[in-house]
Length: 449
Ligand code: S3P
Image 1: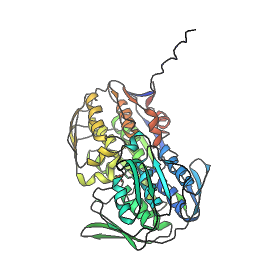
Image 2: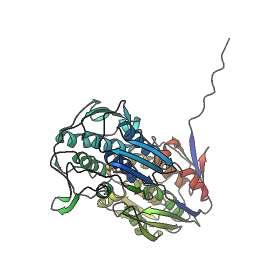
Image 3: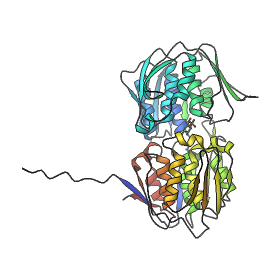
Image 4: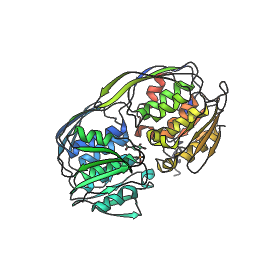
């Protein structure tokens, strides 16, 4: 008997369509960087850590699973509300630890695990398996950890930890992930560990270590910002309130800036100055962006950010601002495509080794949408049309599974003349699982085809 072949289902795609004014208020989802660290420090500490506002995106859920596998008690009490029972250290996992798509999860967990007498094998999805881990493995090896991998410094690899010595290290790349991995390892090492950064990067690890009771010294030196801690300091479980993520808030805010007639408020946005480079840049472009109701949440400044549609002007974004907005270049490039004149973004080498080659993918996607763009090795120049002449759009954009590329082009679709399609929309859930629902609540016409 002949069998009918199973119907070939098309791979899922989302489309962003030209939309009317966006209006409304929403709460920024929990900050991804702070969420990973809350789980990690909770597991390393002794006693109970309760977390509220945890981002329940795929990346963070992977880290929660990893902490459980490494011996911590991890319990979900309700939406964003978690309890971690730390045992003052990590123990050998029974199985491979899969960090999914998350570079932050993988690199910070490698650092934390390196401090203990254990062997652990790490892997990730196809994107993460292609990303360089040498940047953390090299300093961890200098401290005394060892590792073996099948594909150079890429995952999957097995790490052997324990008996570390403190290290004085200046990472060649500006990376909070590298700094944090070394500091977490240093916590278990003999003697002192110092990481010196020529360009300061997000300092959530330093801040949170202090709130868990560790002494962490930060000093400006001739070589740069030096972060120093003594090994052997115990951490004590803490209540942690996770502020809203400025890197996620950026998508509805830029959507409002470029969609005629819009006004959107995003509440509870983390305003740590090492994270707000995008807001500064948008203001330089003439954006109507107002921050109010500034207050403190979990030792960090947060506020409500209002964005109103208006004219944007191209600007030059200096290379030394890159670290404070490293995840925001895809959405900045979208804003630039809707601004008058040229926007030049420099110092973008690190974008080539994110969840995708973000520099290459943004250049290609924008060009496919009819935007004039020039791609340099570490530079992107986008020339926007005049107001009233939105980008053409009308392209199917390949995201290579990168959540921020997908969200960026869906936002561009809200103002482009023709719809924009993106593939692999499921990956948006790694950092912003409620993106579609919240954007539709503002009046955006985006979602599955
Ligand atoms: C992060 C640091 C950044 C950023 C990532 C989150 C962190 O990476 O791109 O999304 O939480 O430390 P690098 O430190 O590699 O630049």
